[in-house]
Image (cartoon, rainbow, N blue to C red; front, top):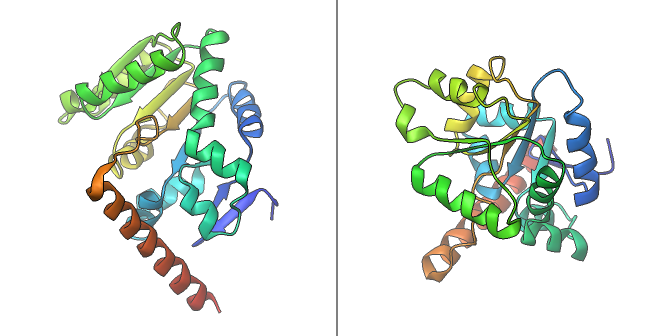
Length: 224
């Protein structure tokens, strides 16, 4: 196994540095088929045990980005540098800078107009010159998901950044990936948003962490 791969419950996640992940991204732009990058979170891993489509998308992704430090901790890969990179969302931040600098065409996709606006504002805060060539809120196309493909293809983007919820995103990719006219699809989840604070957010995070630990332990016992 690649020493940079993390195996967690049968899913292999890329534990690359930000620089290594950006080199992978550059290579994807030279490809002739859609390359898929997925951000893997604790919640996503838990859902992957319950939803076969989510699991299949993670397993088939060309690059899996670690989205939360708890994944590194759970698998014994929590170096100080990698924890900082994951906590700060360095890959997404550097990717937006690179896309803007290299004048790549970026399309933004989210569940709602509000989520889309937040994503656009965050990226513009990071890189003032950032400007998407197009955007789409899925809430307007619930009855006709093919129309989302038309919205994307109409702008001829190099990259789609998607913040669709799971399993909606995974189901959309599985059904439409052969129709999407772009080089790279990047599922960012909500990694661009500041972590929700408050007691409720902390309790939810601790509960998800505990559930993941239980599932990983149970998976390991079943493999023995």
